Amino acid sequence: MVYYFVFYTYYVILDVVGDVMSVYIHIPFCNYICSYCDFCKIIYDKRYIKRYLDSLRSEIVSRYRGEEVKTIYIGGGTPSSLDTQELIMLLDIISLFNLSSDYEFTIEGNIESINEDKLIIMKKYGVNRISVGVESFNSDIIKLLGRRHTKEEVFDKINLIKRYIDNINVDIIYGAYSDISILKMDISYALELNVNHISAYSLIIEDNTLLKVNGFSYIDEDIDFEMYKYINDTLVINGYIHYEISNYAKRGYESRHNLVYWNNDYYYGFGLSSCSYIDNVRIVNTKNLSKYLDGEYIATSIIEDINVRMENEVMLGLRKFKGINLDVFRSKYKRDLMDVFNTDDLIRDGYLVIEDNYLRISSEYMYISNEIIVRMFE
Image (tube, rainbow, N blue to C red; front, side, top):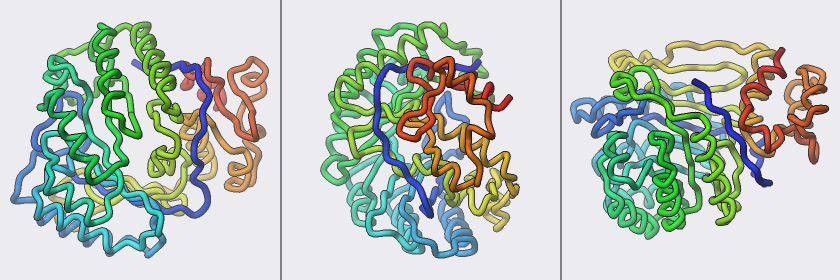
């Protein structure tokens, strides 16, 4: 099932253009497995941690070419599942990179595995942004999603994090329930946290997850849309800019790292299952831990032709509410976007808008964004 979204707001985002190089690092270890997660993950086992981090270092040494790095994102899995010595070993690896003076350095964490000792280490090693998986404040939904925190613990940990790192994102998942009052409470509590960034995702029931195995079903699409609209209206009224389909930020706190993906710029991916996009080559690492530990890092490496690259530019760029900069598109591909894709009818009918030299999906039609993009490709 595909969900579509509509939002009524105006927006400002940061553009990441030019020769920006970013780095994603995957830490697959988790203290437990959430019922909805289909990312590459492994139950925490101390026997593998040092070997994995040694392989991670070796992969970076073998592949990184010394470019200036402006954003780093350590995701998972659950990076905060590492103990303090393992976290130090991981963060020591960051010294391999040529960091710019104004870098953004994000690490993911879960409420129950973040503590003050780890925050002190993160601060020491230059982490300046943290993304926390909250998902819900409702005890029944927390249990359904397989999480292990309480509402009170969320508030305690976010207040603790603020003592060391002030740029905080919290993830919220909705659509695991039809009762919109639960969503309203979750958004109310998220606002009470007063963080700089909120990501709100509609639940997707992926294959090979506990929810899928147990036959969990989607809520009605009209209710899902009503929830999306409530999130948008409420967060925007409270000072958050809706700059990408699922992401909201206070001005100046948009995720610079994720904008690299949405702008289809180059980036490295290191670690199990990670992806890289460098010099028009899409590289996907192995998901097999044994192979990774033996130094067989890469599973596939595909050179993307210009048609694939232009399609990716459109699919990713139109996720942003500001859309695609037409001059940047022309500079990258030596073609005009409107000459490549079917846009005339969509512009005439109001589905697409050109504003300040950006092509974007009209706000009122973002809920059928996938359909619009398919029509552009016909």
